[in-house]
Image: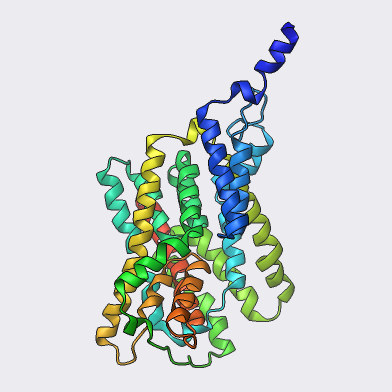
Length: 375
């Protein structure tokens, strides 16, 4: 009988508390959204299942938890806290990105820059709420709507916040179809949403090959701390456009980025152990993340409207919402809203130009925030 009682006290049913069960419900909800609603399933499914795994109660000291040295999960988690997985994902993103639309209309880069306003507004707000400078910078980067960038910066500045920051960033990326459309409708008139973009000029192969080299020099000289992200990003892109290493480009844009996405999602989910994750600070991070993402979307749209004041050829203000770096979710949402207003108004390629600019902008912002917090 004593053996039976000892066995029962070692089970997860006995060891768990309300925090574990709360996070298990959250994990199930993420899995539901990924499978049933198809909200960014490549992100939410690994994260959701990781939350389930990370909140199975266990006997401390057995080397099972993600925060226990020498456990399997701890070794997998090293790729998150070291910034390895985010850099690999940026390599794949670079190999998947077509900059022809951006090069055809360089002024669209400004929309990607404008959308980063959400980052710096949230930085000020987080400092005002009592977050330490490094924590505030980690929370603020959620406004870039870029999960890998959020993980990378948080790993460098506030590793203890990786769980809530990453979950918030990826959650808002997955909820783009819910968050962005109301903001876009509120800030634009139907007349503005009906603006058609002219066909972009044809971009030469030489331009496409020069861009990653020039982009690397301009961006990384401006913010050297962005090298781990933008260095791999532009490297992946030159693999794609060079035309001489198709095997490497295809591998980077498929197997490599998929593998890194699986591990980063699963490990981030597993890092949300109830006793570590459920704190008042986590709640504050989620609230600030929602504000950051909303302001980033609004800033992009409003800046596009401001540009139209001085431009002869008007820009559809919806494109400003694609200035956040949630690739390709925000660009797709802009395109779908344009189609609702006018079934013949195709905004996808123009929105992808803003989207790719947002990726670069958020990485530069992360580099700037990191450089100001290294001391």
